[in-house]
Image (cartoon, rainbow, N blue to C red; front, side, top):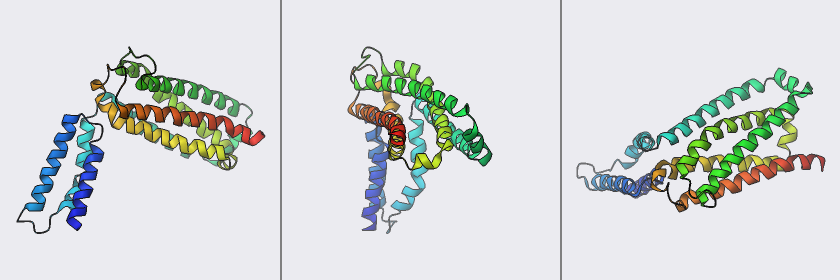
Length: 250
């Protein structure tokens, strides 16, 4: 029974980290794992197959193998996301100091300036993101290759996202308890988290072999699903952001 569960776990993990790869590469990797499983189960020198220890020990190697197959642009996106997260964490720790929070709350200029920059960041980020999503769905710019469009869009998406998140943190710190008690802010936060996860899934899977579907007017189904989810989730984020104020003053 333990060996059977180990085999199932190995197969599920293999399918998870090979999702979105070109068919030939994906099937070759899965066939290789199936061969290893067969040998482990039928090796007379191993009365107790060591499948789970090998699975646990090989996770890092599997992730690294998958990373080596990602396009240079995808690796750049992941590096940008990781760097941005570290910067946001460092900024949060600095801004959360009582003296900084007091300065934000007492100033008559900081809040309106930060809010204006926040709105500009949202405008740039969502405008470019939705432009790319509509192209992936095949609803606009069908004659423009997705890689060409993304090469113009992505360099602006990452900085605008950092500006949007950083200024959003400043606005939150101005009245954290009031924001946390607002139901629309909670909806916005959940939708924002799901939207970020969706973007990571898109860049970790189908985008890694964009060259295969780049010139098609309609990309593959997985890419279109990610684009549709992106449009829906970012729309919820935008609408919920607007309703936060209406909940306070309505």
